[in-house]
Image 1 (cartoon, rainbow, N blue to C red):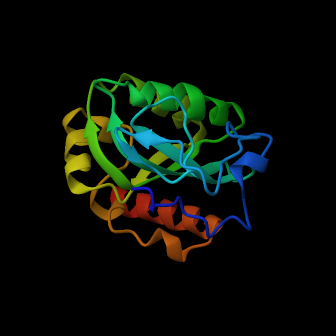
Image 2 (tube, one colour):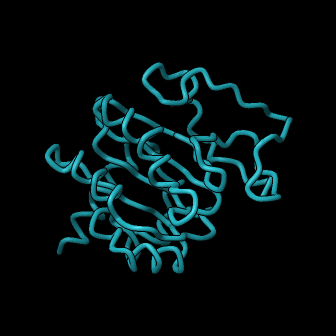
Length: 190
């Protein structure tokens, strides 16, 4: 796991640690010293801690004018024991919503497991953005993670699975990605 880096090809466009509106503003991540672990496995030092001991993220792009962010994740999404959704909602999502973000693209290729609790924080997140035509899309989450998230009705609030899996998001520039995701949303409604 220590070799899996957050996506870095967009660093010419955006760096969360340099964005004064980002919850990660001023964060200093080492390039060489591995300090973060998920269970007993070291992870790449570029992943950001947000309060969960099993799930880390990287805000890889934010556009406040277009009102969207792209957040990549690694680890085990564990709402049952660690209440990861509460940590994510309070520490990352709420500050972004306060800055005008209403569209969230979540990249889940490196989310290995999901352990459910309830859907209250997902519902709250959706309620916070729905009046502003906001949405949450989860791209490329593993099938068993999608199944578990659906089991607790998270798909009522997060667009997940189906056409949102196996999506080649890295071929896009950030603003083109949000347009492609919005086209997927339209397609999913038909």
